[in-house]
Length: 355
Ligand code: NAD
Ligand code: DAU
Image 1 (cartoon, rainbow, N blue to C red):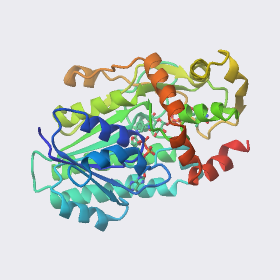
Image 2 (tube, protein in one colour):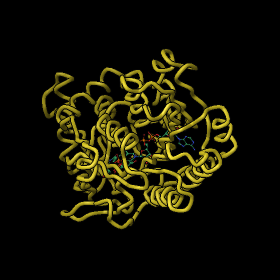
Image 3 (cartoon, helix red, strand yellow):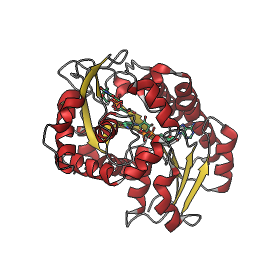
Image 4 (cartoon, protein in one colour):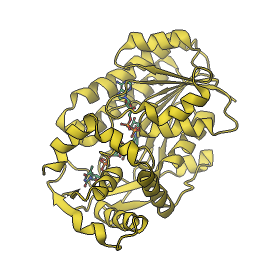
């Protein structure tokens, strides 16, 4: 096994949580995980309670750490001989970046810069070190009804979120060329699955169905997203960490494009089936609301490179993934309620429920 001390940033968020679970379920993984997370509204340490019980302070270490504070990152590097970083931590929600971009600049740009600087101090010119940066397809901008984003597509971010992610990608690549720090970057389309914070389309809609609240569709619902089951993203990240060429970027996608309204109709049917309701029961809640400012029309990615070079492919069909996802949310009402009783509730009510 190549890496023994993997530092995960943002491990208490949606993808980070899924990735840490994925890692500990891998027979080949015998190393340690050091999870640093600020625990913003999106970070929930309860997600990893089982991992903590099984491996806490033995192979799993959690530090409540803000990556905008470089000295606290340094303290973690002094304690652990980190040989790999997988950097998930970010402000991740486009709507929030429109309402208040400041945090996005701080965490996504300055936070990434702080991590890179800490690595520059500690990596000891080891060829076996790796900084893997998790990024998004949104850095490439917005597509019309045809075409795809390739690894070579020029960056053209449109929201404060995607601009901050683009900026962090450039910094990571700059540290490869300037300081020869071994890095890899992955750009992924929309993930879905368990533990996703219910501000994002799929869990928000499931939550609202269960509460019989409006299902707010932005604009005409014709924007298109490509959806990848989160476990498939995790398996891909691990393939890059193990065998990806250093200094390279890799695209991930589901090759599974849906308009928002079509996806929502299917989701309504899936929740209805699992709740033993009439197939169309929840569709009456669909409500068209004001569009997102600068709403990107379509994201779609070409992921041939990672398929050909690293033998990755999606393993979960959209039907299977959506069924599993709905099942998980219906079986984890307490998880949702815990979130809603916190900061999330105030924010969501202010921004959506009063529309
Ligand atoms: P998330 O919002 O669910 O989780 C983000 C995590 O980062 C939280 O645990 C939060 O507490 C932590 N965090 C935020 N600011 C921090 C700070 N200053 N210091 C330390 N920790 C901090 O996000 P996610 O959906 O899991 O996304 C993870 C990464 O994947 C992000 O970099 C995002 O840009 C990228 N990404 C997400 C998707 C998607 O569909 N969710 C798709 C492509 C790429
Ligand atoms: O493409 C990757 C990106 O996917 C990630 O980088 C981001 O971190 C992640 O949040 C996601 O961004 P989106 O903006 O695509 O995801 P979101 O779930 O917010 O919205 C998906 C689509 O649904 C988008 O076209 C906006 C629309 N939407 C969203 C919400 C929350 C609605 O119509 N109504 C809603 O209430």
